Image 1 (cartoon, rainbow, N blue to C red):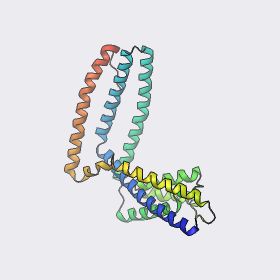
Image 2: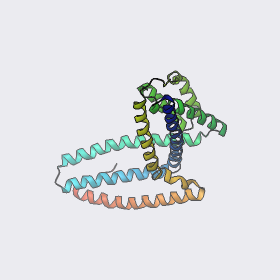
Image 3: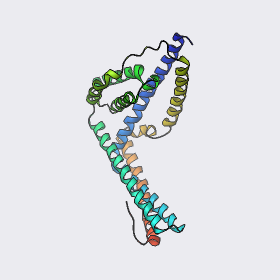
Image 4: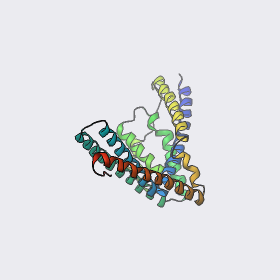
Length: 249
């Protein structure tokens, strides 16, 4: 493969990466907004679903003649994992509040967008096979700040790590090695894009059409939670009957 042919392929993967980067940011922004708008419902739903799962599994263990020590150990471990996960969810909610409340103006958005897209074109780790761990972590941090529209932190962070993101001369590289990586990357991006479009948060985009659709989503969400609450009451009573006491998260 000639150098010009290699650069043509590289330009193609760069265009794909730019589109993918913009696509991921759209999803991140949807996720932040949905989390912010429905944080109370999300927390309640998360707790009840986890409690139901824990009690049903522990109840099944008891009916399968597992010892009380095994059941107690399962419940204890489940509660520890739940605390870790709920703390993570609370951190996500705090992030969503910061993203939604600290909105930047269009001029700052454009500057941030242009800067990070230029970084993607020249420094995306997937097209820099020699990128080390420090390089990758710095790029991922900038990617997160870009997705959050965190203008101030983004440029402050870039100033700290800008010496990592230097120009690379691709003359003389192992073209075949790069080509294989690029082809596999294009396939992964295409597959991931198709998959993401079919799930959360992209399927929630229409929720934010106007205040009416937001209210409708909130009402439907609360109706689902009410059904979970009713199931939770029955599950608790069933578990208490075989375990001897009520267990909650």
